[in-house]
Image 1 (cartoon, rainbow, N blue to C red):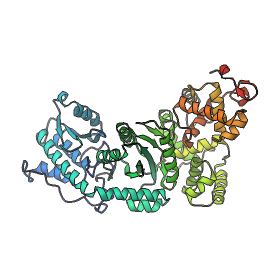
Image 2: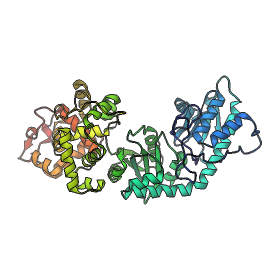
Image 3: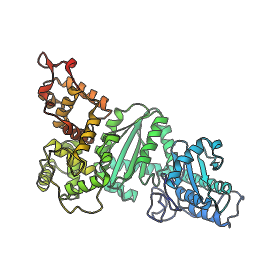
Length: 518
């Protein structure tokens, strides 16, 4: 569906999802100046309705703003709800938000929804408009649906006229981000985005997937409150979600991209949200996750999915704890700390920050002093990375919390009993052998050679065991964020016997698998 105003499901009233209160979201990347409507009122094709009809005028005015605003106005006129359903994207517009699921079911089985108005938009993508009329509609639902569908088709044709220019813009902005010029990229976008979430997909059908994604969620405005870049980069389909430091809700974006990967049999990887000036790191993380993904799946580079602490710990508690931990640090120090922790070394962080290695080391010494923490301790590093990934606090913290490696998960963040249950459930698939090896490797900050020496194993043996860990946990261990949360889990459940000396052995350096215990 090639229309310029597609947003994620959401919105009540007649405003478009993703824009400021009372104002529709605006299209960037087109010839329309920011802050202005995309053009004059769009007339309804044909003479079925007089333009002087008040409810038609209301629809026409809404169509001039965005597709989301148009669907919201249709819901208001019907005194009920309305949703636009794409075969791939699902409910790309829905007013109210909760109507999306019912609209998708009605679009899939229109004969079973006699009380609803199900209207084909008659475009090449099979888009369906579903209206659930209330008790006092302004006009019959069938007439509202017909006029709305006509206006949607007009919007789609107008979007086709600027598609080529907008796609070139997306490619240019991606190039600027990859070249380490985030300020210039932000200026081109005319947006206040500070962070990006990178998705990289590959497969035989990337060109078809690109067109499907563009039609399903025209990225000129927003999807679920998140701006998107969608473009082809060589043999890859690249989707970059642009947002603020709070990261927002990316469920709509991630769900859509996952459906695209499944439908077109692509292998995809997604990085954790990262500041725009760390785009290179996020790009590499997404590429690593894509390499390990199976066909038809989107693999996350960082975090533990449903087991991740960002989902386990209540958001308000996580936000408050992170604010107290990071209180002494200004923006530049936080950027330096995050670049170092996510990249894993001063040598990699320096070019991402566009400073010398000596400057990074000096900043880290200052950060350690301000925080009163040992930055060389792996548990402290894991705690800091978790705090940097937490949602931004609305106001500065009143006090400062000091980080200590014991306990690995502070009581201010999660009660000890809950921490134990979380860690035990996460690590349940690992036997004693793998737990000891994983713990040692994580304490060595993911460095295989020194961990193998400490364990008394050959590096190839440890590498094989780590592969078993990743497969058993269904995690990508190359991600710094994944390793940080795993480290906190392993240390939370560690016992005095979880040490290299406890590995059963035979013949000196050879592990005897038959003696491993849970």
